Length: 324
Ligand code: PBG
Image (cartoon, rainbow, N blue to C red):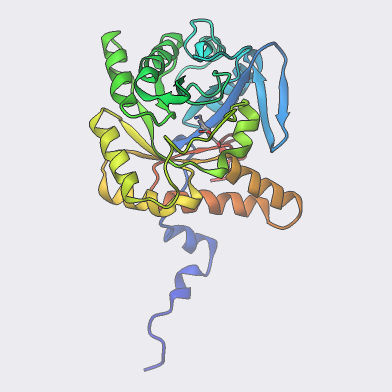
């Protein structure tokens, strides 16, 4: 009997065989592309720490949304950069706020693309925190009503789904209640359930101008070393009515994605955040990584870990290039 009987290399011989035995595939319909919408017109300002990504005025955002839909990307996540900020983040829930204006314009221009509002106050508060401040502390319960109002105003402007990213306790419940009261019981909530206090959000804070002016986000975002706590966060958000739950960031937290999908049957999203994007871009620009292969490998790994949905700044480019 010749040795070995089993040869793992047999099914790796050609691209066709490898494709036949592939366990993990990427699908643009399960990707969400995030954009940053800013005031004025004809603005398409590249974000220095996120080359290839832009601050877009509403008219430019509409054009991008049309491309996103045409390319077959599943969803568009909209972040706002308001004209002015204040202590209570009024711009987040203003009827004519930047995100609300963007949703109205985009809704007109696309048909079935899933429009998703990021619900948080940090881009709209002058102190840069995700909730309101009382006696020098972020007040959890005082923030809930404002977050719920933000979600409702986004839905009224045309959002199909809302995604709370603030990490206040009870926000999913508060948002669900507010939406149902206004007869928007069909609108799903995708909660940033296990969101870590991560250094990988650095470039996003440049892009959105949302760096905290004092302190940090460790009183609400999670400690990077904790995984059982992430299971509790996810469990609670599902109990409060979350339809989709998210782990964020993605690549440094693949074990958390795996633990969560093994445990909960809810649809699972993972956010490949700004810092993950910036690392790949910076290394590629230096000639230190093969960009295209690194991008595909990073996304495949996130999906292999169990994520159904991936929020990624690469979604539009990959879908337009038919890279799957
Ligand atoms: C708002 C929010 C952040 C991100 C998404 N929503 C920043 C933060 O919490 O500091 C990060 C996204 C990214 O880094 O790509 N709270």
